[in-house]
Image 1 (cartoon, one colour):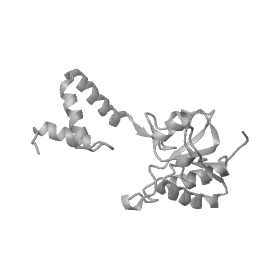
Image 2: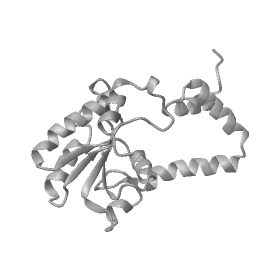
Image 3: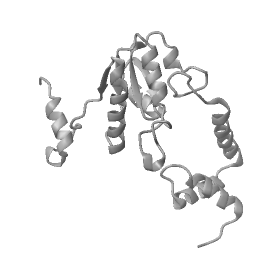
Image 4: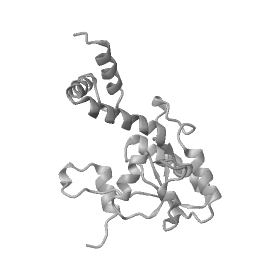
Length: 200
């Protein structure tokens, strides 16, 4: 394999640490950066440093923000009777884009996956149970995790943990996406779509 100058090797190694970026893609990024003006490189570098300097985690829901408490948690127009549990901060933006939810959020920081070291004590499970226990106005916990094997096991675990607190624990409905063919739907998705049917 060709040996590159040390600055290129270091930059490739840095980019390869990003999710979904392998060595070839990382090298492509580095070659692109070498072609753009120095000023643009400096702007990009400053914006990355600014992430570390100015972005923090919300003390209440654990999303990313610039202040100790995020805009959603500070908004007194939000419905405090429900909290939507998500895997990562990016999931909040996805749910907010629907305009269908006006409650609070709680970011777990991942899903249970003991092989990768993601155990309940690593996730923000304790913070969630304390938050629900201490907030008398909270009536519903919505589990909005991906329906993967790890997501399903995390939802089962959370349901068990929260059931003793006397709050309603729900999960997102599942069903067939628009444009999907019944022929290719798996049994679980099709079964959930059948159970969750509604008037036409």
